[in-house]
Image 1 (cartoon, one colour):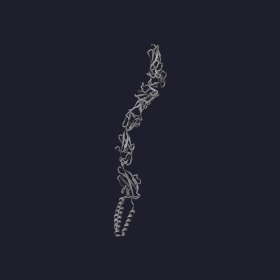
Image 2 (spheres, rainbow, N blue to C red):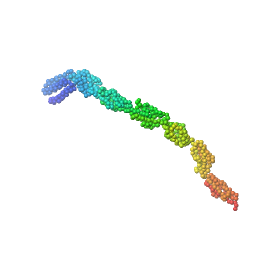
Image 3 (cartoon, helix red, strand yellow):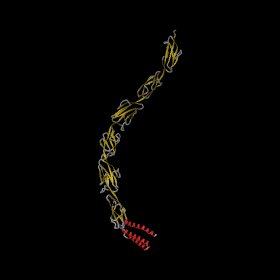
Image 4 (cartoon, rainbow, N blue to C red):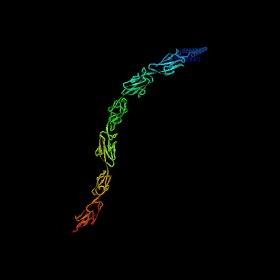
Length: 555
């Protein structure tokens, strides 16, 4: 048991003693205290070993006196306080760090300590290329110098930050302006005398284009599409600025200098208008709208994005030359009505136009137009007059001045003719359309085996001709009757007569045949389509032939 306690004391005490003394020396820089503690710990260890070896109580008493004396030295001697900067104890008037130095005033005592209550001034001195950023643990962490009151052991931190260069288009900024061929850049604030900026400084960059140029964009700034822009100097910064040329727009060889350009035959509205230098930035898309004067129209553009459109556009990537051509335009009047669309609607009909007039209701000079007349119900096209002529429904004209054309229509009525018996005959002229007020002479012509009987409807009478006045639609009907031929003869010749005589008779007519003998003869009998020896009745259902036979009274 005794041996185990001795070994335990050796293995624990000696490392503890050495480690504690080293800590006091290394961190407190208190050499007297370290020496006293080393002696005290060694004496205590020795006296305790003596006690275990000889059982001498005086060794324990001596150890207690050593402990009491050591504690008295520690607590009763004048106390000093250490000051550390970035975990380095100040043992002189300055301490060197990676990025600079810190000077203290007053310096610590020979033991590296300060008396309690001492007010110490700390001054940061950055190395070249660095600035003081801040303190931590001082009375004012943003001042330099700053102070600290030694109310106890103090550990202060100081932070340095790098100083950086600003480079614009590969030129290092050494003042407030950097100049280039196309323009310059204003810099606010400018760098300090060493041409560098404190870390995190926000620098405003303003591009100033020279005459004939525009600022285009930035690269590697906080806002590459803004002017001015900013850059935060967190490290060395390389920034680029791009300028682009500004170009002129010419219309009909005139430089565009306003939102409206005027010419002899019209004007052009330009949007957007050019800048104060009469120029445009590269890539600007300009809309141009032609406004012809009265009596003129837009013919075409040349040099634009679409030479047949209005408005049209042009994109500025260099000086641009655009031509606008106006042309005379003429109105067309049909039947005293100005034409504004693809057709002119009239009381008597309509006239279609190919092509139709433009939106201004006019035609370009020398345009060829085809006019087609279409009669309305109750009318017919008759002829053209004025600046067109002829009787064809379609006519072409060339517009080389204002044109006034009349389409002449005639009112018409319909004449409808019919016959009562199919194939019984015909009426001329046939059914058709006739001008109002005209007279039409109707002639009924019976077919073979028929005879004209009479007129019905808007014609009357039994004459084969009738004159109709066309003051309205007319309907006539010619009545024909079927007839058959009756052929009569006597035998022997000269022996008598037959009535009725040979001729044409209405179908269905009943004829009474009478034989009249001549002197010296007497009627004897009928032959053919009649029979008997007295008066005979004959119904005309077909062509009939009868013969009357007589007997001579002379033996």
